[in-house]
Amino acid sequence: NQDVEKEEPLKLVSPNNPDPPEIIFLSNIDLAVAFPVETVFFFEVTPDKSSSTLNISHRLEKAVAEVLLVPYYFMAGRLNFNRQTRRLELLCNNAGALFVTRFSCGGFSVGFVTNHGILDGKSASEMFQNLASICRGENIVNQVLYNDRTCFRARIPPQIKYPHMEYVKLQDISSLASSFTAPNQLFPLDIRSKTSPPLPNGFVGNAVITAFATSKVAELVEKPFCFCVEKMREAIERVTEEYVRSVIDWLEVYKGVPATCNGNFYVSAWSKLPFGELDFGFGKLAHGGP
Image (cartoon, rainbow, N blue to C red):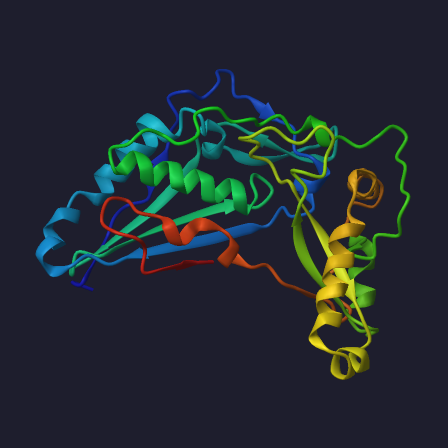
């Protein structure tokens, strides 16, 4: 299509990549959400400025390769299954990619595919804010990243103190798919402030666990909206430091995932993440999402 100028994928090669390649431990919270996330952002450019994006691919490549991937070198890595530990780990081997498409009107899109096990939504939005800042000719916003996830190691021995109905054992998924009980509303809950001590600024691993609220349908229909709000408040307050540790231990024993089966549904609000503020030097994005 002559209206679309699709560039070759930009290979992510970090000048700061460890040699030999570094292996980063992934926590049980990381592993519970180890699925691919495809994200694309679209930007409009006014007709009088359409020619200003002719080099957008080169600009992004330069920003990523020379600046962004110094602190974010691990984003050029790949997940690797360690047969000895029987766990996924992050191998920093300079094998990532970024996709850029320019349209004849001057607008462009930036696409990125990563795995949720590497970073959560807050960390991803901060990374893109840093990339946008670099492209605008400004300094990187957050220069110091904290990528050590061992603070979320399981306890020895594991101490599971709650039932954790918000997760399901992998071995039970097929048998639950055909059954139905009262559904739970699942939602991500940031635990950065719930750990002791709180996680440091710049933590890039997953610091989000699955929380849940449950009720009978009749109650939702008959009771006022404040009843739903109260259920959500109870769900949030249920998650304490000990609850988080119990989740980690449960995942260590059962290798589970969020229980999006058996009538449950998961609500994740991207509107709470500042992707809408992204500006690569041509104005804020027109649309973006998974």
